[in-house]
Each structure stands twice: as structure tokens, then as C-alpha cells.
Amino acid sequence: DDEKVFQRQATNLSASTDNDKEQSRPPGWLSLWSLERVANFRDASGPDTLAPYRCEGGFLKQGVLFRTGHWVTATAADLHILRDTLHIKTYLDLRNGQDFESVDAECFDDYPPSPNGRHDASWPREAGERRRVSCPFSKGLQPRPLQEMAQVGEIDPDDKR
Picture 1 (spheres, one colour):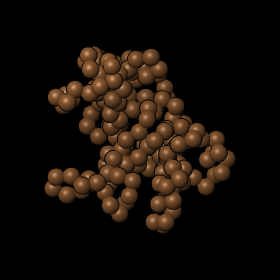
Picture 2 (cartoon, helix red, strand yellow):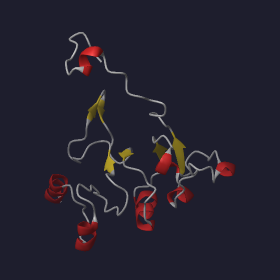
Picture 3 (cartoon, rainbow, N blue to C red):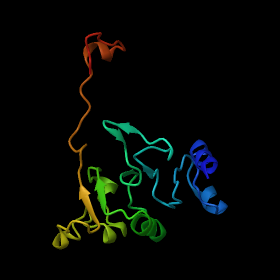
Picture 4 (cartoon, helix red, strand yellow):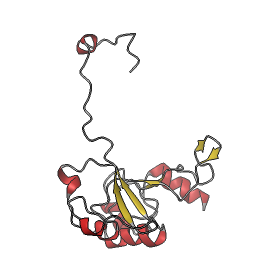
């Protein structure tokens, strides 16, 4: 029902009908697929199923590419939805693998290898098998130093960055 989809988006709540689960989720939790511990899971084609985001040559196809927070805290029910309902084959992990991001978790049994190296012997996986691909795009990035004008709260009109 389109009204329910809009209502879920407007309130930023889960589609779950289990009131206890909804009340136990942190403020701002977004889970249109009733995921319990995978935060902010959403279709990259956009939140509106009737109006996907445009791209050169058309629109982004729905149900192909998703964005989310990390999966380390995913429950068995969450993994079932990701694996068996949404049929996700590849988990592109953009985290840099430091601190809590490098912990081992149940999700890496379904989407190996674990960032801690537990599945090194089973890598690489064949095309079509569930897998985790690490792409730490932010690793080593640092903020640029403030220019003299910025240090005093002014913006250099020639600064296009």
C-alpha cells in the first residue's frame, strides 16, 4: 500500500507491526524491511518505489543496490532477510577496518571473508556465491589543513574546494 510506504518514510520507523521491536529501536532507526539490528538499510534507487532516482540513460533499477550501516550486529533474522528475501550476493564493505569495524561476526559466515582474516583460506569465492568485498575508500584520508583565512572564520573567495 503506497500510503503505508509514505508513512514509514515520513516517520522514519520500521514497517514492523511488532510494537515492542519498534519501541526498542534507537531514535531515527530506518528499516523498511523490518531489520532488527542492521541500521539505515535502504534501496540506493531511492525511497519512493514509484519514482526511482534518475541517472544518465534512465533510472536506477530497484532491488539491485542497497546502502546500509555495518552488518556486525545483524541478527539471524536480519541475515535471513538479506540472504533469502533480498537475495544479496555481494556485501561491499566500504569501512576502513579499524577499531570496532574489524571485529568478527556471524554475518561473515554468510558473507566471507571476515575482516579479521578468519576465512582467508576460502577466498576468493566464485561469481554468484555470497561474499564480502572490502573497499576501504576512506582509509588514509585526512582532513586538509585549514587555510589562514579559515582559521579566523573567513572563507577565501578563491577556494573552490
